[in-house]
Length: 130
Image (cartoon, rainbow, N blue to C red; front, side, top):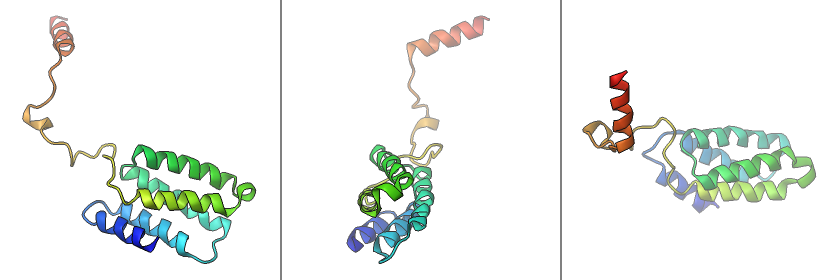
C-alpha cells in the first residue's frame, strides 16, 4: 500500500493540492496501527477534497459506500471500512475527472469551436423576432 500511495502522490504532482492531501489522509489512516472510529471522521474531509478536485464515477461510488460504512461503523466494524479505504487509495492513483467549474482542461471553447446546432439557431431566430 505504501507503493500505491507513492504512485498516487507522484501522478498528482502537477495538479491541485486537494488530491495529494486526500491521498495523504487516506494513506495515513491505512498505515496507522490503531485507529479509533472517531478517527475515520477525517475520511469525510478527504472525500470532500476528492469530490472538489474532480472525482470519477468509481470514486464517487466508493465515497458513497464508504460513507454508509462509516455511519454503520459500530455494526460492521473496521474491516469493511478499511477495504473501502484501500480501494479509494488505489483509485486515487488514476487521474481525476474534470472538476465542476474547472476550465483549465477545456480547449477551443473560446476559439469558435462551440458546437452549432440547428435547434440553437431556431431558438436564436425566434428570440430576435420577439
